Image: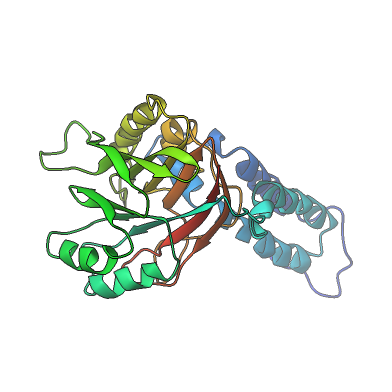
Length: 317
């Protein structure tokens, strides 16, 4: 990078062309992240996972443009600023009033090393949800969740390490096979149930896609992507028109690896609601998606004993 000029140097239309090119590049990546290829190391998915944070390049480039006293760089910075606003600006505003016919759904990866499952369950009650989906339920923690939730949520089902608690009757409960081929037996992270709500029958899916790993070989998302394809097929084959999908999908909705799912569901258009990691949330990898319904409000809830934050959504049919 070129050195800053003296404060006595007049502003110039010649300096700062490199900064201007960087600003144009940031704008292009914000609007067209798919231009970054997956290979090597699933670089495209890595960019898309943290895409909103690319906007931090704008204040950095602004400082450098001021130091260079460059008209070119300052003008070019309008491009990434406008691009970020166009892509993510709408998420800064809260959703509209869902009305009396909306229901509340809650999604939480409770962590398999949670030291206070009872406290976590009690914390979730504060959101007064109608549906609660949980992942990473361990055999030792499951009784604690049952004990706290069963009075308010008499209808519940679990499969493997995931579970669904509901104020509405559940029927046609079945396992959804989203296990990648090379994962061993006993891996059970998908279920489907029909909830009979005041607004009619709704298919509720709960899923926990495989984790991704960031290492020397890049962004390891092979299992996650394979599982997303299987989940997408299950949702596409769902005969009920109204669908709610709750789960830890282990990436953001901008990640092309989740396209088999996101292309078949309606994504929320309100609030970032970052959920991971709990101590410094940088991304929302816990998701609430719908079909023939609208998420009118989405928010993160206070931390529990998990490394994820719970998220809650108001859903209008």
